[in-house]
Length: 252
Image 1 (cartoon, one colour):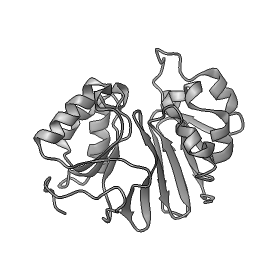
Image 2 (image 1 turned 90 degrees about the vertical axis):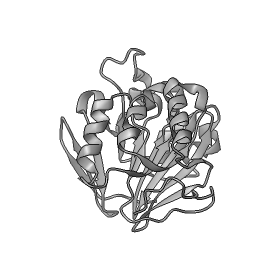
Image 3 (image 1 turned 135 degrees about the horizontal axis):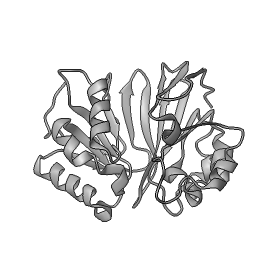
């Protein structure tokens, strides 16, 4: 596997094929937590990343990355969102330029092939970031990480995507970023809420929690880390606190 940073990246309409691809989407705010997770998951003698996907340029999504990329260098970057949106996004932009790491601007329809039929596809992209679909066999997960005005309208509130197995709530359960129609139309088996304990903004909003009545919900503030894995046939969910789950993905 080449680690050269001068290799020309794919155009938005092309694919990147690689078996056992190592992909990181954003990184959160905690350097220690992210470093521990990467250390646990990446091979000892192969600490680089094939792709780093910047799916939102908000500070809380990226604060850990400026220090992490020095240790876990990405070969390529797929970028969406306004570079000027945060201090960390500006630092990353400068780092990639100085180290000649290829950066591709995300566009709708861009697909990264991960091997064995698995892929990540950009469903929407704009100034606040992008919405990503992960698909492997009959497993489908939607990550609306960078949601802005008109994002869900462009996706027909999920109708253009179809049913998914896992849905990550947008913006830590912020009500305007999680319209009821999107959850109803996607009809996920599992909803994941990434939010800090005692969130200073009072997230998640109660109306979002009320909307999720009847759905399986896991929360990082209560369950700790949440690990979803699949072989394309079965989906297994492990959590730091609480009970693991194992189901068969429904597909479309």
